[in-house]
Length: 186
Image (cartoon, rainbow, N blue to C red; front, side, top):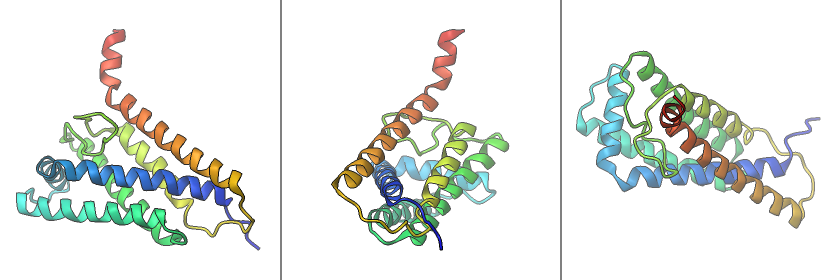
């Protein structure tokens, strides 16, 4: 008998990931040209051609996958599918950033910050952030423990999910401004 994950934890993870992927997709759609340029940079870091038409196709595919991830996270029961798509996208993004950093060709804008920051360079903090988000996404894979949920459970889950997205946005801004913060103390 599997105890499963508490459904409140899964609902909170769903709220966080739904908002996260909706935010990233909208961020990318607001400036498709810049997003395609960033995608082109990542393609080159993998040793692929950074041709604008290829970058545009990949960009549209990534946006579609992010919208699909948001949809799967929002819809119950989509646990394994949501977890797989979330882990796959975040893993691909983490790998892209890691490879570009290791090769010394990290883009000056990771293309991933939507919380009010611009020009956030790809770096190890973002790779780590994505690994943490993968762990959160994998919470959706197992079946939730069977127990009745009341109003307080749903309210707590949604509040926790909203708190988590606020913490994500805060971390995003801190990571983006790390260099400025360090310069200010020197």
